[in-house]
Length: 310
Ligand code: SF4
Image 1 (cartoon, protein in one colour):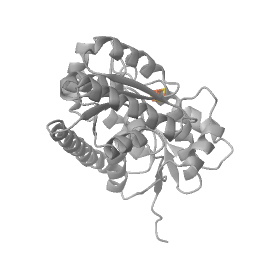
Image 2: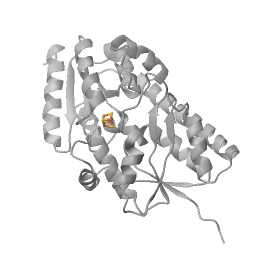
Image 3: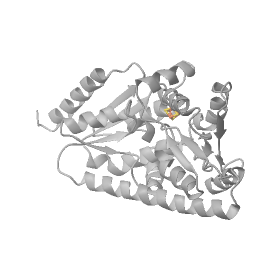
């Protein structure tokens, strides 16, 4: 009998926006198929909101909606546990708990979940070790898994470099530029940050991204704004701001309600970054497009007024 191809479901939310290339290339390298949930829409948001506790952040609610959309459509749904990349390099605690949370929320479904765990600080398990363990659990040989990981990682790094270089060019363009400081899953989700960048483009402003920079340089530069921030992604964003605050006309701090790391770090940014207008925009499931656009319109007017263009 012909062997069936394993299908892995990838929820289009949270770490998908950081690791999509790595995940897809890795599973494809092992001869498996991947299926990605559709872009966030009202239905996904409502399903996720119904499954989450009220206190969950908007990003997590959306994530649960994406997991629900994949249930029954694949052999496994990938729900990684990414705790840290070493000391002072932690991820938000949500990324430590998502596998447990998802298994609990979907405990009555027959759906199988797949996970890997990155914890360099306590368990001394880096990403490569974690992928090796996951690939072996799927029945692949160590040699095949190592090869698939190395190729996928190479592709992921090359793609990130390409995107960062593209953004470097945007800073040199003529015209008003606004730096969006947000987690990638907030910045790119059609129900969250994409409405912001789409609006900016419509009114002739160039949106640039604080997180799309060389990650190693960003981690070093983050110390200029905070030597103690321990959240990896917030540090990359801080570094992106430190590297480019003089190249932009304004900064939008874009967060999902209620986010602990952003609440602390964004407060720090508004205190320490001087000489450039900053808008702090926190999105929740009730935030309508009209309300966001009104605030963006006022912010652009403030920038134009400050630059003597109004
Ligand atoms: S960093 Fe904030 S938005 Fe992201 S998962 Fe954690 S609490 Fe949610």
